[in-house]
Image (cartoon, rainbow, N blue to C red; front, side, top):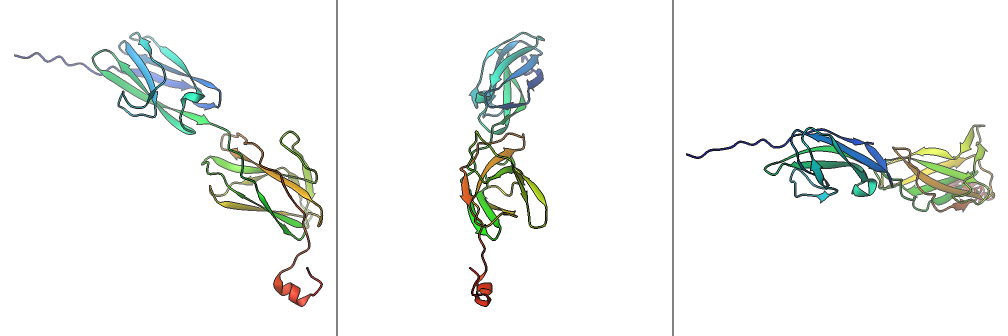
Length: 232
């Protein structure tokens, strides 16, 4: 007769990553234990197939002995959650387990905003980021030109006496759409400089956009101008 030898897949236990969220340039540690010894292989961009995805490291594991390997943010292919599969091959069968590790990179630079003029107000418009984790935009206002090395603070009192301290956080609207923010209480014919930075859900801040400028001016609609020849 034929003798069948049953062999269970090797079991991985205590699989963890520390920290669970990494920033650009940071490292993280993958720790694990196996019920049996064998060759281990962590992979990303794959699935339960041990030949899928990209291998990040290899090593040997002793039965019941904890092991770890240090990886870096550059090993992770995607912004956000990445599933890391760890395979253990005991020479007969291959077992696996998986764990999530999150890559959080700073937002991209906001596209150059545009400025539309109104009476004692400016309308700032920009294309929102296509990144899913953008939660707000930090909007800067100044009467002096500035750059990322000289970010300004500015206090503004609007027509109702409300004081706004710039920069202000503007809640992000839907991704890849045009968002507009009104700044009221300005002085006509004074040039104001404006720029934006995106902020993501992890609190990371992107680079400053191009600094643009505009000067409020008295305006009126067509109907108003028809009734008041002096309106312009």
